[in-house]
Image (cartoon, rainbow, N blue to C red; front, side, top):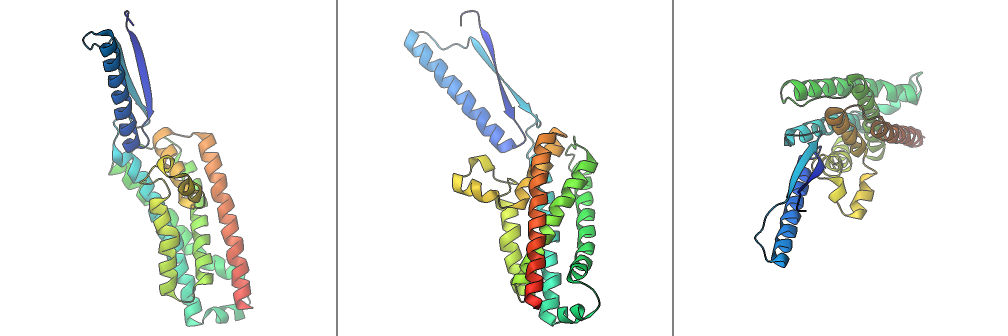
Length: 261
């Protein structure tokens, strides 16, 4: 201690709020330890060790660099789940779905025809949101745009699948809208890591977040925007999105056939 030393604390700055809290805690603990050592030695407080913090991925600790990418997930959830639930439940509400089934097309073709416009709308909304994030809000995009589009397509498929499942359960557009907001929008806003850090949530709530598709997409967005093409993170979260999309579409297809029968 007499010769001095350098201590570096490296903080993950992807979540700027958590990074600031960690930085404050480290500084507080360090100051308390120095004061304790000085009191025990009966000398004045001095700092033989200089504490230096280094923030990765978000050195300026700008909250918008963390929040703006997460907004893309919220917007795509609205486009994918809410609008899809409304457009399909409208057919059930008006009684025109049976008329569609009387035509020489399969239920898969009917569902595909309903989903394609909203898939294109979702991809367009994602590209517009990313363009505004980079051009207007000056949020850096360190990862691959092609990889971002591919992962966004997986999340959009999962959101569309959720909307289809909701439309098979609800009998009216009003009920579909309420269920879609409660089951998709609110979890995407609260339990995805968009605003609140998942690591600081209680253990039961952390387990619940694994059922929220937006959780995996927000992790991909934060990684691609702030860190770059970190393949292990992108791969694992993209696999989870693909699994959820397949599960929701299988459930929606089965429910649609059962309801018509």
